[in-house]
Length: 416
Ligand SMILES: [Zn+2]
Image: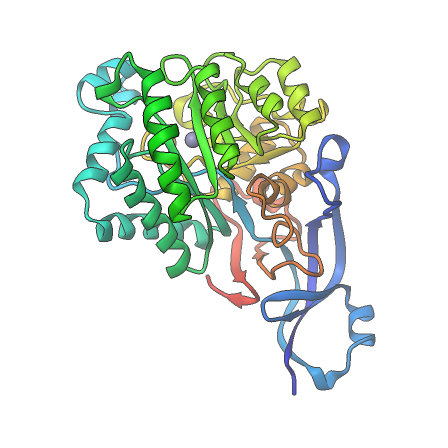
C-alpha cells in the first residue's frame, strides 16, 4: 500500500533552518538540490533530499508517485507575515485623490483614511466581511502565499474588533491557507478618544479589549501603530507589556514616518518583529538584531505611497533578520502579491535572490512563530511549496509583472 506520497524530479531551492531567524550572511543560506525528491505523509515532509538517496532508501511498496515535476523549480510556499486584508470596502477613490496630489488631511476631511474603513466594517455583515476577505486571501494563495497573517484594527471598539477576528479565523478554517490572527485594536485613536490616547490605551485596550480577546482565544499576536499622532513609544510600551503578560506574542508598527524609537522599543521588549522601519536609526536596528527581533519590511507600501524604500540591504549587513510582507490594506497598499514583494526586495532594496527567498519564507515564518512547521522544505515541516515558471527563484524578480507561480501546494495537495 502506497501510503506515502512521492514527489520527484524537482529542482529544489530552500532556506536552511538552523533553529533561529537567518541574519547577516546567513540570510542567504539557501540550499539548492538539482534533482530532489520528497516523501510526504499526512501533509508533512518525511524525507527530502537528493532523489537517488531518497529512492534508494525507500521500499516501493510504501510509496505512491504523486507527481514527477520534470526538473521544474520548487521553493517553499510564501509566508506573508503582515496584512490588513480583512476589510469591507476598497478605497480606490482615495488613491486617486492621492495621485492628484491631495494631502492626507484633506483626504481625511473628505471621509477617507482608516476611519472610512472603520465605518465600512461597521456597516458590513459578518458574511459580507468574510466574502471580501476570502476573495483576497484566495487571490494571495494563487500568487503563492500559503500562510498569511491578518490583523484586526478597522473596528477600534470591542464588538467590531471581535467581529473582525471571527472573520479572520473563519478564513483560516474555510480556505486552504494557514491564517495567523493578530489583534490590532491599537491601529488608530478612535474619534471619540481624540486627545485622550492614554485613556484609550489604559482603560479600553488594556483593561477591556485584551482580556476579552484572550478569553475568546481568537488572536495570537498583539500589534500597535507606534507613530507621531497615533500611539507614542510610552503608550506602545504599556500596551505591549500588558499583552505579553497576558500571553500574547507581540509586534509593532515602528518608525514608518518618524524615528520615534519604535525599533528601540522592539529591541527592549524583544518583540517577535517590528514592521516598516523606514526611518529607524542604525543604532536601534542593530539593537533589534541583537535581540533577535525580526525586521518585517513592506516595500509595496513605499511603492504605493511613492516613498523611499526601507534600508533592507543595510539591515541584512547589520545583522538584523529581515522578512518581507505585503501589508495588504485598502489605504496605503492594496497588494496581496508576494512575488511583487520579492521583486521589489531584489530590485529596490538590493537584497540578493537568496536573501529575498529567506525573507519571504523562513524568516517570515519566524516572524509568525511558525518556523517549526513552515518556511522551509525540510523533514518534519509541512509540504507547502510552489512550482515556478523559471529555472531558479531569480525568475521571481526577472520576469517583472508576472507572478512566475505555476502551481501551489498546501500540505502536499495542489490548491492553486
Ligand atoms: Zn500594517
